[in-house]
Length: 594
Image 1 (cartoon, rainbow, N blue to C red):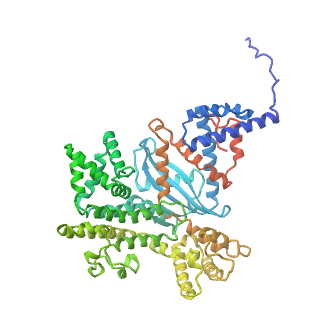
Image 2 (image 1 turned 90 degrees about the horizontal axis):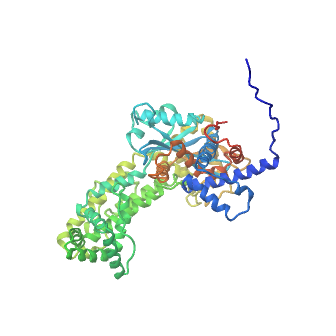
Image 3 (image 1 turned 90 degrees about the vertical axis):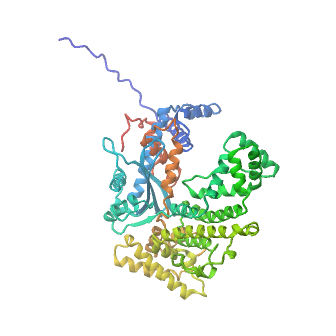
């Protein structure tokens, strides 16, 4: 049998020098920076190399001149290097600390049903309360029938953390919306979590309640009010009508767009109504021009805007929606506001009912105000309604307007009061004791304030049993709460997070237990805005051209977008990312987790 000789072995290979390795690392660092910048700004992968060529046209940097970022290479760097390392770094943090989560389910523009998860924790190294995106987890499993039951969502949540070896027991609080699947009292995600994690804190998101409160109130107003807002938008829908209207605006020295409202988001009524009130005369004048041309919508708008009560209705809607929007904007905030949330909820309610209710009747807590007691209300003529001078000239329509105005305000207030009562009121009331201005009382009211704050603190401990596993810790916290007041170095004007972070470092960490307890309480999510923002961000990243992106790629892009924040926390090694790029260990056929 004849064997074919393979020929002589070529042993003349070259070991890369240190200089060559350094050049590769410099080049990889440039690629890392460019890809992360492109992903954060939602630049398509196939356009990245054009940006690189632009950079190369005005530089002599050898490492940048060697950069070549094809579509596939860019995507693999984002997915298998930046996204993976960022999530892995975040997982390492969560493995070693207690944290809270916010979660929501939704369907994206590609009709993928996903579970969005956001995490929040007290970071004692950076002296901040941190928030970060965790996962977009697909709810429907391959080769199985679609299901989005509470058990399915709970299993998705569990699997998402188990895949990164993050213990579920590290979660001590969770926030979700008010739907029965998430927040019901039977066979809901809340119930499954309570059965898995003893004494876990559950928070119902109050943001959507502001929309629903307005929706229920609007049902008490005449239908022609909403028809007018809709018809004005329809009247200006075409390009030539909008152009002619803008010319009319110039005649009245007015400017600004007429904002459309979104019927599923009732609070968008505020900017829409504001725009109509600012441009009331130009709209009326333009509608008059259209009706003379026999335009049907122009006739309807002109007829409605000539009614004497229409401005008062619009001003009333503006006042109520402004109050609700102020609260809603606060709820959408990423800042630590849970300690002031109850006061803001109460203030919003009282400002709304004060339109029709006697001031001396709204001094008590808003959940105790009796909306069915007739003696609590002002006479019609004393209602705090703007623009009444026009209404009073038409007595026949005055009574009808006041009845509708009263029913509108009470409709909003009744739904608001009924549903905000269902929040975790004991937690929201008692957590305000952590506010430095409340904790460090003024001398005049010191004894009374200290006693009240101590009661609130004891109630807070009852709410947060998940953070207090033994009686000794409970006693220690109470002792430190009382003893800390004697410290003269405390500044009640400090930011609440900075205040409690500083408490932990006083006298060689003497009050560290109290500091940790307070900061973990403040890290409880006040609303569910984070996961909802992630869905908005994802839909922004997905267009018709990019709608078929893999879920893994979307997850990586979302993690890449927060890379800078995680990098500042030293949660992962930037050097490791550069090394992986330099050695080409990011393509799917070469990539493997370490």
